[in-house]
Length: 247
Image (cartoon, rainbow, N blue to C red; front, side):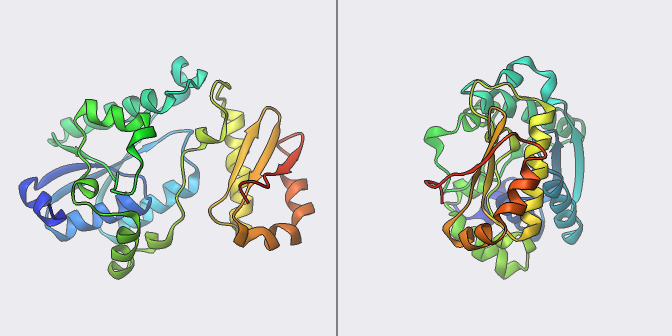
C-alpha cells in the first residue's frame, strides 16, 4: 500500500506527533495529500525541551494544527517504578490521553510514526499501540528509516537528518526509580553536549554516576573537551565514565 492510498482511504486522522523524523514526515505527507490531520504533542518530563521546540517549529513550517497535551507521567507509580515493560504502560497513558482529546475534536483514527525499520519484536510500546487500535501508515506503506530521511530531505524538512532520540526514561536502568531530578540531570548534560556538537549519543544514569556513550565519529571531539565535559556532567553526577563498547 502506498502512503497516499492510506490518506485517500482515511482522510481524517489524528497524529501522535513527536517532532522526530518519522512523525514529521507523516505530518507533511498527510498535509500534502489533502487529509484533515491534527497533530497532538504529549509534553511530559520524558521529553527534552529541544524536542518540543522542534515539534512546534515543524508544525509552524507546515502550517499544521498542533495541540499540546501536558501529562504528569511521574504521577503513575507503575511508570515511576520503571519495570521492564514501562514503555507499555507509558504508551497506554500517553495514547489514551491523545485518543480522548482527539475524540472530542472529532477524530476517531489515531496514527503514529512507527516505520518499516523499527524492530517490533522488542518494543512493549508497540503492543500498546496495537491494543488501542493505533495505525502506523509508514509501516503499512513499507517505508524504511532511510527512505523516510530521503523523502524528508526532498521535501525540505529540517528534520530529515535529525538523530534518533529515545525518551529520557531510557537513560535509567530498568528497576531503578524514575525521578524528576534524574531526568532533568540527563537532559541538562545532553543539552550541553549537543551545543558542543555531539550527535547520536547518550548520557546514561548508573546510580549516582553517569555513563557517556558516543559514536566513533565524535571520539576526537570528546577527547579534545574531556575535562570540560566531565566537569560539567559532575555538576549533576558523582562520577563520569566513557563507555568504550558503545564508542
